[in-house]
Amino acid sequence: MHIVGTGFLARSLAPIADAHPDTVVLAAGVSWASGTSGTDFAREAALLADTARRCAADGRRLLFFSTASTGMYGNANGPGREDEPVEPCTPYGRHKLALEGQLQDSGADHLILRLGHLVGPGQPPHQLLPALLRQVRSGAVQIHRGAARDLISVADVITVIDRLLGLGLRGEVVNVASGFAVPVERIVDHLEHRLGVRVERTWSDSGAQHAIAIERLTALVPDVARHFGPAYYRPVLDTFLAAA
Image 1 (cartoon, one colour):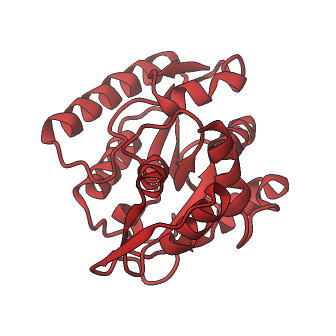
Image 2 (image 1 turned 135 degrees about the vertical axis):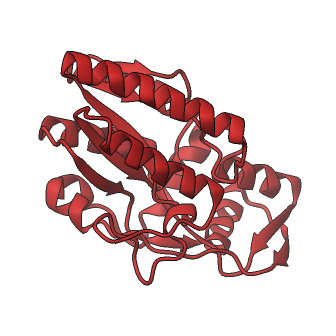
């Protein structure tokens, strides 16, 4: 595969970099779910347009990473599904949905993966887990009441990507997540327990809580999805802490 990008996800794809030579992976762009920069959004849209044009010209498939975050599915009535209309509730979510449409209209063979909250070594410091870990180590954590996040190991995501690309999927949108939204306070509980500390918790206004439907993912890669469950987040956090 040809990987466009040098960030966290692009580096994590190294184990399968020599596979799927018919595929271009666009692993560059806005990675901050709270981002609102019109300049950054425009830069990613231009990069996608150029990459899709090249893929259409030489017959390669383009893998694009969208989001299954609250920005995309926060307004969903029930678990967020790929085959239902979506009303994004943040600028980031609206941007990613617009890019999905841009790619679908480009004429390039493509696969769109809507990702949950990836967890793994070397992820950007502004993302959820590094930010929470810094707060726990500082002794004070601010938690949005009711907030929950679907955590998934980046190693499992790479395995899923490898399997999905091997199936030859084209023109599909697939959620890649564990299917279990974990309350943020439980994430903090686990970090406290593993680090042997107690932190002061400050509660703010209600946070976004949502679930991500993974029936399509489970049907496509049942052997990978089988180990997801309510307690899946614990070993994911342990692996993250071991690397941190």
